Length: 152
Image (cartoon, rainbow, N blue to C red; front, side):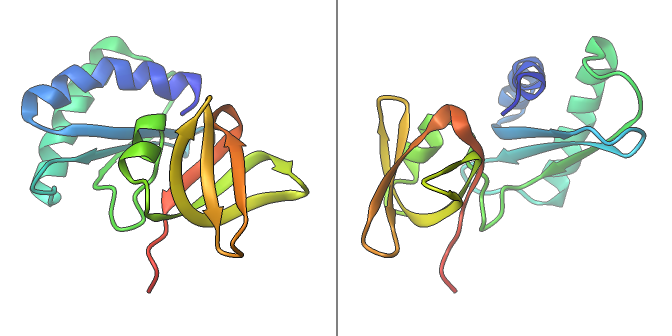
């Protein structure tokens, strides 16, 4: 998550916790008047549209008071879905053994996109067992996006 997303997460997480939801992550895509603030939530029994509406109402209230973003943006509250986004080292540890897709900010050995099995975190690096039987160690700070990628 970018610095802006981390700031927003810190603002809204207590309210979501009070409602019984886990804050999975925050994505902010700045595109002028078409900017998007996407909040991913989850709960032990999963979330549905009603949960997303309830969380959206609560988040809107917090953001109206705190005003962390200037200008117009659309707020979207969503469940993480099958291709759950991964934001933190704890996510990589929690889903160790699962198949994931990881995109890097800058290429590693000439490659920006990696698909493989999550093998945990060590020394601020994600360990990923690639599908070609190789392993790679990716700096957490250099990960652009990551998500679970179940096989179909």
